[in-house]
Length: 228
Figure 1 (tube, one colour):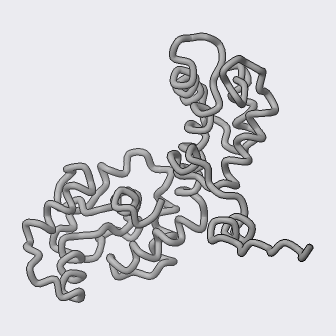
Figure 2 (cartoon, rainbow, N blue to C red):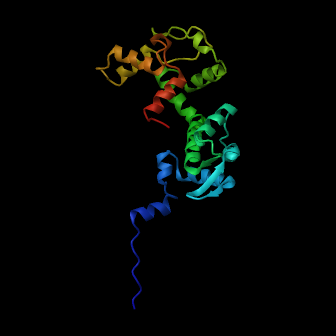
Figure 3 (cartoon, rainbow, N blue to C red):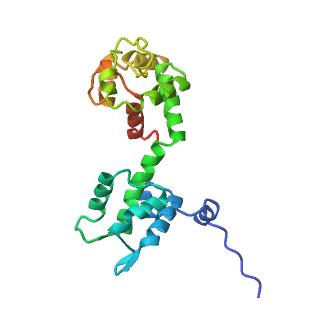
């Protein structure tokens, strides 16, 4: 009998073998990679207990913090931990299921990615193009200003587009900056009113003269889907 012919590899099978594990439906719903899901599942399994109807079992609420520590994404405060446990166990049954635990961890992983060094470099590069400053200047000025919780009160009025008056004030994207970018991109139909609205939307209505700070710019870009 002649040897059976080998089946040609399908697109899906070749993708699975060459590209690593495939995203599950749960991973896609929570916007995480298959590798990230595997790590979450491993941390969950360290504390999981069997329960009828739950394929992965359940995790005692008291072990949620330890599981997240094992993942390297611990709750940053007791308040955040209480928020998580109230979401994970709304009926106060004392346990959390795997899908709900994964969803919380996905949020924390996304937050970690947004504040990673690589992501902040990307933000600084894009922000620097708008404000006409070097990446190094933007990073330095915002890093120096990072610990100031009351810096909203120290904004200068930048609506005219001039340089900041005090060196320690970090740059913001102004109306003049947006006009310049629109001109470079030859967006002739963009009105000044629209540019003003863009600034107000980005800074939460703080005022056109306040401009758009780096973290506000980051938020706008994330909502637009430019980055995660």
